View (cartoon, rainbow, N blue to C red):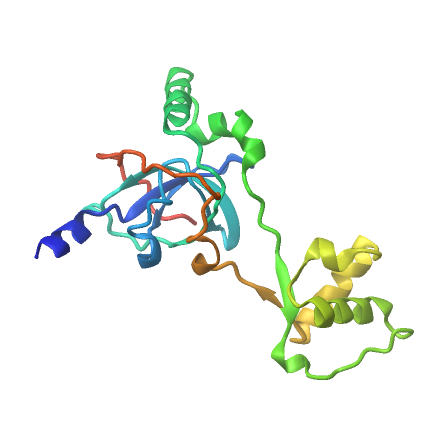
Length: 219
């Protein structure tokens, strides 16, 4: 019973602010894999879905689900190993936001930490349907180059695949290969990142923020 009570009292919702484009703050569900992780703390960088795209944000608070949380929240997709922004720094940013009547995400976006936000680079791999399909190098050099790189190296980012190709040529070729189900995008998963931490560093858990208003689900 005691174990169940402790589990019920664990924070189950995080509020995430987006720094790169100052897109606001939204609440997200903490997945079971991260529920008791000391790495998911105030100031941690996380990957979450916003407007059908994967975005990187910073956790500004954690709280327990209440009866007011009636909507279904999107889950945290991944937790980055980058060292979290310190709690005192976020408190300072909150003071500035309150003093100047400015949203916290805009204050954070203007801070030095905006340049430290990890970027998500889309990754691609050959689809199992690809088989032994061969592209004529002379007929379509872009198709041939992309497929050969994926065959040789496996998972590749856009930057790695595009080397030596014009941007428009690359985009057109990649779109065709994906539409033909020959190339597929690799999704970032929680298990890819949540268990990692900077070598030799201890990430202390910040105090849980209580009595935070419900901001609703992210669009």
